[in-house]
Amino acid sequence: MPQYDLDLFVIGAGSGGVRAARIAAQHGARVAVAEDYRIGGTCVVRGCIPKKIMVLSSRFHDAWDDARGFGWSFPAAPEFSWPALRDAKDREIARLSKVYEDNLLGSGVAIHRTRAVLDDPHTVRFADGSRSVTAAHILVATGSHPVHPDIPGCELGISSNEAFDLPELPKRILIVGGGYIALEFGCLFQRLGAAVTICYHGSKVLRGFDEDVRDEMMLALATEGTTLKMDDEIATISEGEGGVRNVAFTSGQTEPFDLVFFATGRRASTAGMGLAEAGVDLAADGSVKVDATSKSSVDHIYAVGDVTNRLQLTPVAIREGHAVADSLFGKKPWQVDHSLVATAVFSTPEVGTVGLSEAAARAGGRGVDIYRARFRSLKHTLTRRQERTLMKIVVEQKTDKVLGVHIVGEDAGEMIQLAAIPLVMGATKADFDRAIAVHPTAAEELVTLRTKVPAADPGAA
Ligand code: NDP
Image 1: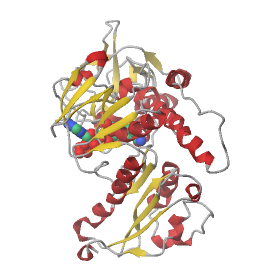
Image 2: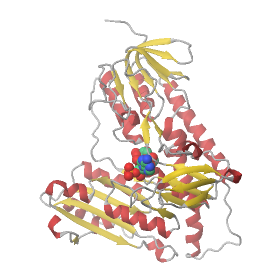
Image 3: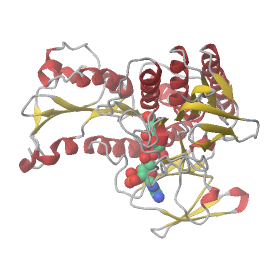
Image 4: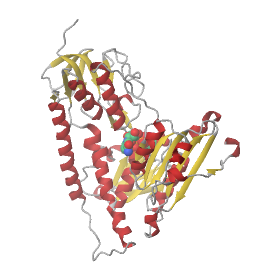
């Protein structure tokens, strides 16, 4: 049996890597992790956490306005300071990154602040030239990075990586894309005071989500003042006077912006790591091909999180990392179930979704019943806002099983987390109906929906 310096070497200290390293060490494994940026990865440093902090800040814009409907008045208009928010966010991110680091060190994991590459299937070399180590198992948890279309002047745009550290809030912002990041940043920038345009090459944002959700979000974005430029793309970007970005669209228009922000997806970070040379099969998009246990084509090399391009979601990466550590070192092998993963888009209003969309449920001719409510929440009966809450339940006719729940509205992210529990338990619509409502709440609609919505296309029902 060959002797190795370590039982596990983890490349990348993001959500998946940190969890795997910590759990493996707690099982008694000798573990080291290499990270060339800050501990915590995209989620902690330039993703979920700083984004949510900024989303929460942006919602005070609505809160001040809504308060007037409830009898409040303000002697002066509240003022917002982008640098104050950015600095407060930085302090929290530094604290959190330190917590992650302390948790690793406290579990006995060695941390190497350098980039690591594979010299051979069992040898990791530190790119700073300091040393090489051998490991019985290697876990690739290097995450992903933003990508953008290759158009003339694209270097004049930014991605979410830079969006968190802007010196000031630009006045006119163009966001390209119609997915999670486009909607989240579009809504938050708009509420913090910028004029936001979202440019998307399709006709409706959030491709892949339930059609009712997509329609509701299109309406909500337009109602709150976002300019929607659908079925359009950027042709070129050029720099004008004072740093202005002059954007020519394929539709023929040209418009000036102060910031162009590409939210056009993320790609697995595997370049220059020696993976292919070590025998690891990569997909055409560069992601590591893995089996259900997160094992790559090389028996002792595993990969978790965005680098595998299964579901680019932090909690999924954490589960995958945990499963690898338990399976290799904890004598309790288990696999992550990637079906029925609840997710939220932290736009305003929020989107929460779990399970199948109506279209996906109907695919293959399955009989489906739809229950839907669209209503003005109690809060907004007294505010000026036109915001509506949407709740939709997709049910399999034959079994009465709930296949999907979709919510647009305040706290949709919180609600969908709870809806995910009955769904993974295989709950039926009758199970939902047996729960007695909590009144008055928005969530009570989930247990009081009794009327089936007729199918838009009767042939589809
Ligand atoms: P998404 O995949 O969500 O969205 C990318 C968007 O860019 C889509 O609308 C896509 O259109 C569009 N697009 C792709 N290529 C081009 C192009 N060449 N020109 C114009 N538009 C293009 O990616 P994001 O960047 O928003 O986020 C990355 C991932 O990070 C998400 O998939 C998500 O998994 C994760 N994330 C999760 C969050 C959460 O859980 N709340 C928050 C933020 C990110 P089309 O759909 O038509 O291809």
